[in-house]
Length: 83
Image (cartoon, rainbow, N blue to C red):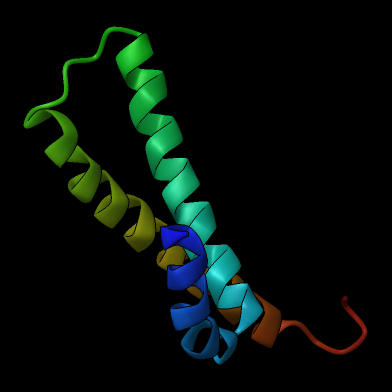
C-alpha cells in the first residue's frame, strides 16, 4: 500500500524527467552498489563502511560525466564523412 501511494505521488514529477537521465542515474547507482559489494566480497575494508558509498558514487559520477563530455567533443569534431 505504501509503495503504491508513493508511486502515485511521484509519477507526475518523474514523468517530466527525460528517460535517458533516469537510465544514467540508475546505471550510476547500480555501478556504485555493485562495485562496493564486489570489493567487500573480495575482502576490501571500506573506510567509513557504508558511508563510503557516497564517495564512491561521487567518484563514479565525476568519471561518467568526464567520459560523456569527452565522447561528446569527439562526436562534434568528426567530419560528416568520417562517421
